[in-house]
Length: 629
Image (tube, rainbow, N blue to C red; front, top):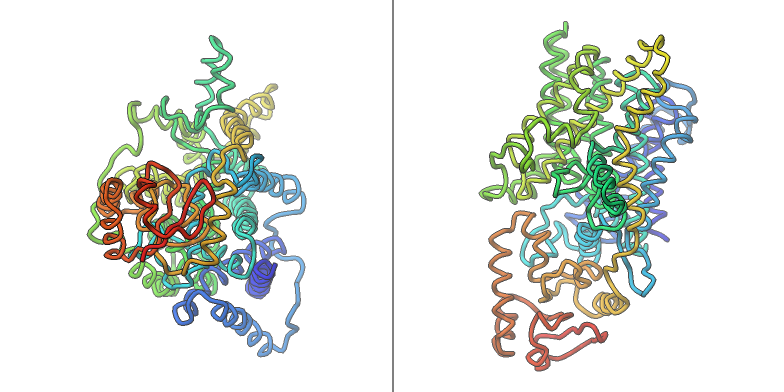
């Protein structure tokens, strides 16, 4: 698979750059940062070339050459071997942590990804798990439409005539693999495997950097990825009267200890509901973690090089994950003032920050202007005052106690116990939390959790350090080991149950049948890439998701919550009126709106008798494609 080889090439180039820039770090750190650099080279590096050449083979070939040029020049100037791997360096991880923690946690994520993403279905076609039944179809649509249409900036395939403004860089990375012949499933899975591994490893490295303790870093990883609050109590209590109250965790759709709306449990497990279905969130976390690490190191060493590297990574982030970019900006602002107060050489301190800020802004601003601001400017569904997040009926503190669980109860004691530098980072997390509690940044209020989770990361790391300190201070207590087990269980029991449910759900929800796959193949081979297709608004739509063609209006799950609220309402009303329109009226409507095909998979869409007056170009029995002339 040429696409996979190209991806591996960029990961290798990323490692070479990391190897050159971080000679003082160990091989684990250089490998981790190499994965970050390699991913950025492909998903952000393609942008300037795609503007000129489109999202094409040519743009990728130019990027492949360009990616190697700076490294080659550096090595030739230094008269060094092109490939030299120094050993030793500052320790950030060891083989034991990699084998016993990082790989097992990553393996859990990989298994869930594998049985949740275009999984072969027993009865034919493909299926998803519980958490990927919705969002995955959107991401697949971005992957296929970017590669199939080749236009850059890409169009928003779920609403004709609009630009894609949703952060799409991680999906575009998969588009690169798909463009070069990698099957869609593996074009999504392989980068997801790598990104997940980088995320888990990075979280451990960051936690170790902040706490200085391996045990605390191990706990932080476990608490973050197997997270959950006290939601399990509802199921245990209900099981006293009815055992099915517990077993329904594994049977019912979204009825878990970390996602139980009836009881106001809204703090989702990071693996099941954030990483697996939300690729942009996973990629955003993957990038903000090295940024926080570099920022802390830069503040300690006042190294201009680290501030420059930090600025380059941060500058790529808006269209990787806007929420993580915003969170990094808040953290940076808080830490700038927190460390400025104690810095002796304030002039050099400010100069270093200027390097960081100018590079980050110079790279980020064009993305924000072209994509983010064009979507949010003048749109009332973005940036509104909203207090108390998604809490519907609980007292304020109780909502967070039962949702965050032990992390919320221990946050204040951990803050008091923390070292000075930890307190500053904790304060930055608190500012993010406060803003997310007061401002709704997007149409879906629930999506503010993408900011809350950054605070949650910081809190869990500091809390983990506090628990290790507490355990050592209680060495005279006979039963401290048993207490430790209970505390860990309280942190993770809800998460374990949710992950179990998610695994059981893998591959049981059919998303596309054999006919859908056949239809998608036909469309890819016979329908022009720029064609607009009229379909119903079902989110399981092979036209856009599998074939990458633009539809007149897609599912409200995407279009509405991406800020096109009025547009969705207007076009869905038009679709409703077409159900009773004549063939002549439908033809006139299609020609007026640039629609060249009609796809029907349901009698509830447009009357089949009316559609029979159009030219049928392909039929699978379940669905039919008509050409509009």
